[in-house]
Amino acid sequence: MSLVLFLSALLLILIGSFNLVINCITLYSQLHDSHQIHIESVATDFLHIIDIYLLAIFFYTFSAGIYQLFIGEHELARWLNIKTLEDLKGKLASMIILLLATLFVQEVTLWKDDLLQAGIGIAAISGVLIWFTYILREKK
Image (cartoon, rainbow, N blue to C red; front, side):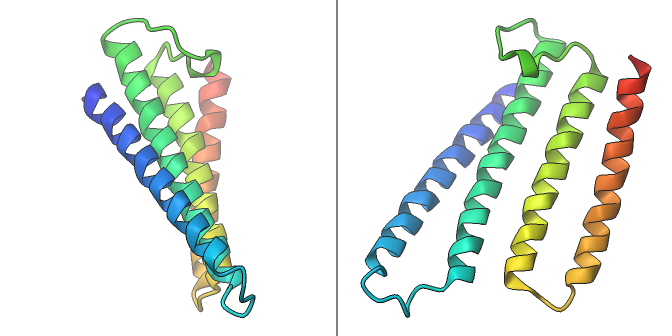
């Protein structure tokens, strides 16, 4: 399972890089005519790329955590040291909050009618995840 998550992270990095190159080429080709460039569209496209990279980091963190918990120790960055399942849950909860925040910013750039409902939903989910992370830190 850890290998599948790691390969998913690599695939997402490739997809994000491909989208980044395509968006940069498209933006560069539109530079001669400023009326073709729609700032909202450009912002949404680049936020989507950031979201893809964050999802790749999420899968990598999950794969490294599963590996450390069930297979064995591995030399990783200090922030990625995962000793217990609660450590993994806390790191993943923090990343989910960040993913939801980028999704909300994408919604703001598109400004759909249900923006308030999306904001309330994301705020509720983020609040629960922040509370969960706080409880995990208090146990230590």
